[in-house]
Length: 423
Image (cartoon, rainbow, N blue to C red; front, side, top):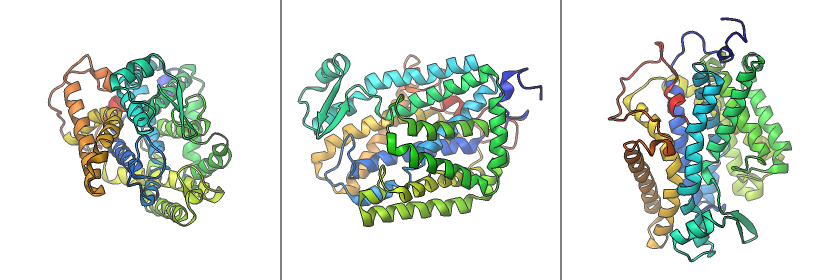
């Protein structure tokens, strides 16, 4: 390999034979699917959300703890790996330009057009407006955006809501792009340090120690503030660390092998940590194991689940999911659109189902079916209209029936599909 600095793309060490990471594509799709289910669960949980079912249940709170600590960290890690594959083929300036178009257009469009129905129906539920949606969107959301207070809580009207992930992803990509452009050699040094320390039990110990440190020290000061790009210091410390780690170890290597080797131990630790949190929540109440509070012990347990669940997902994914298919190709192209649309559909549908008095299992099934169907319909319509594709995170290439020959990951391949479609 040429000396570092001769070609800044060598700061992204993917080797001469790039291996297509189908496992990461599957994990990304699965993580977004879990996100949809998580938001469905929030509707039935006791914690305040954009919409809350009259059938709220503490059992759902305990179930949500099974994915709350780690699902977003996993998405940032996979997105970091996808970014690394892109950076291995193009310079940092092109990387930043392409990712800005890819991420900022859906973010701005989503904030101005897709998100407002969520705010409107939340305010309807809080009895803060009786306007029509069109009047609310124009007069209060677009022209007079500000804050409203209800029940001692302040709500910001113009808000990216669930699209905060896209905003953070853009910021992290720009930071890595700057590091590549400066060519300081920091990234290769960090990669070597990661491979040296994240071996054997170090793979489990050091990241858990890091997450526990941020949870015990920074979290009490700032809390979890998703969407506050300039104030979510706790979130940035954890999420950027995961994004950067994914960027550094995108190529299969010692850390990937360790994830496979330790997958059973990691899964056992993750399940145990979740069971402990759920048990404390159930016996001690919200202060014993809630999503956002809890004593020091709970914060350490939260950190154990946060990392060990990721190791288990990466290990089992590498072992069983590292092959392509036509289904994966389709889902990889569609999943970002599903992410953009799903929460708005869910909130609106929940509002209109509220008075139907359906049994909870049937109501939940209908909500999920309506959400998935609306997301699928949106994707199928938008991908056929070139002018709309960039606003829903769809690549600008020509469309047609999703085509792909199933591939094994052993041969040479270009960047993973996630690099082209990661949100």
